Length: 388
Image (cartoon, rainbow, N blue to C red; front, side):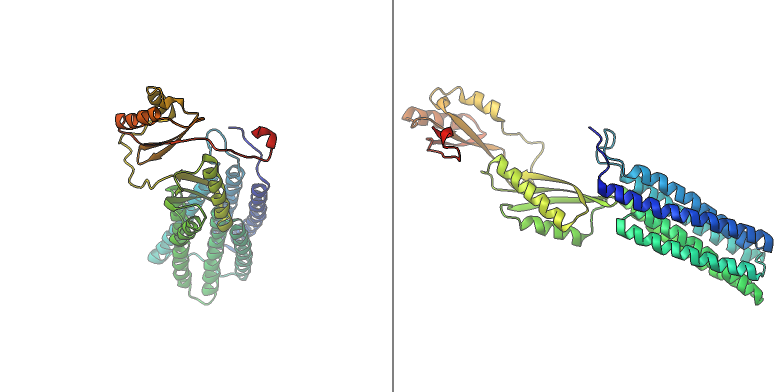
């Protein structure tokens, strides 16, 4: 498989994710430095811990940049469907990190409450820095989430919520410092436990969604029904069955069995297939890979272990036994429930001997149920000289 260049759409998406993540990384670096320095100066251990949390966000931003670099690579020999699942795995990892942050916060503050070792110190400077952190991280969350929704990136959405977990952490610090100023340091613990729950809950939601995608969960029923209805309404399609979907990051993969008339040409079946794929992509632009299996009959109950009707070479070899029947000019083969129906075209009118061979051939093969003998008729094309 030849690797092609990344499409303009993929490049634009990759750039959007990269740009907003770089901005967030710069903000995380600045906030972590300010909070850690202020925490040491004011002897606020909570603010130092919050600064370390912001530092962990910067590490997460670097991780997102790495995943974003490889998730948009084109298909290659080892990854024929592309590398979009890199983003799904990244979302799972970020979701698990949110769960870890939530559990760590819950354990830390719960132990402070149980052991009565709350260490928050009152400081107006620490209070101001915590407020600044909340404003900065909330801004970062909202803009990152906006881009994530626009480019449909669960990885970027998970990183946005990771930024908000830092904002929540700063809220806890703010409550703790303010409550300490009024002589109620226990308020910090109560707020922290609630925030820890929110962070862990969001991480669980993100991780579970990514895990379901890795296990090829299909689209919601309403979305699948809309796609199925669109296929059924296409002219020349008789029935649609075994429609299956799955997600791969911001892409959707679909396959289905489409039943058409049994006597159409291969080219007409292919044209119906092209028309169907075009219709589906108009309804669901995220459809990246569509595989439609063109059926000439209902095959839901097809027995894969049963005998198969022969292909053309074996049919030709069988007809060669019948001298008069074997004088056909062209042969069209139709299949029905693993039996064969033949249309034989002759250059001259078939004689009685030919019909006798026809009956004998049908009687001699269990898979052969019908033979139609026809004479050629005049045909016309745009180029009259071709018909002379």
